[in-house]
Length: 350
Image 1 (cartoon, helix red, strand yellow):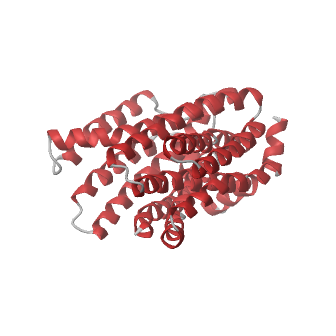
Image 2: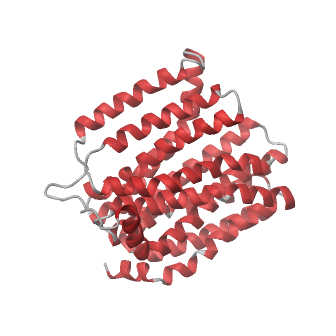
């Protein structure tokens, strides 16, 4: 059922919710890049072992390894961007970071097929690890420290990770809510819109093409919207983009054929384009806790969004996939009142 299909994403979300804040705490207290080196290695091991799973339970285990590696990488990866670029270039730099991730997601199926055709499924984990290990060594050599010269690591908080997490959440909790809404909408469209066009008779090749177009559109939108946000203000750009996303998604639900695909692609692109903006605002508000801030608005929100895929799948089981897509279109509108909260007012003063 759609609920079962959504549970993989829910499980991914649980791992990220538990692991990312702790990893963010560690990354704020050390410039050592070991997290961004070992994270991809674990991700590669888990992802390449999934095709060899003898059972659903084993597949969940490998998904867990994959998710743990991903959760290790992202807080230090996102936070590190804020340490190595200037503030006026932060949003566009985070956009490039996200686009690189999107490019990896887009090309990974092609890479997997190439590995299966050349070395076979059994040897795929070994072959896939080679470029990841080479990249890790390159990172160690070229980025020995993720900090600016003279920049000190954050001091240990009296209450440890929980105290640090609370102190950051007090400042950026509206950004967490907005980011969670964004991730629910984005992941929901990518999961349930393909089911809709599959029910209408589309084949796997056509569905793959649609998902590719959505990813390309999201990448272009991130660059354009991030540039606009850096020049004309993050708050105004964020509100306009979220409102436009809902308009596009509602239009896609009402349309059919290629027009529906176009509108859903535009809506998803608009939603995803807000990702670098919320991340930049969070890092600007908490400059000494960039790792934790990134883990909250990029990781914790992503995990919460994934956890909602199973409930959204249940809505689809009960009322049809169109009902689920209606919820996806409504979500960005629900985030708009958040731009009136304190973090966004503070951002306007900067």
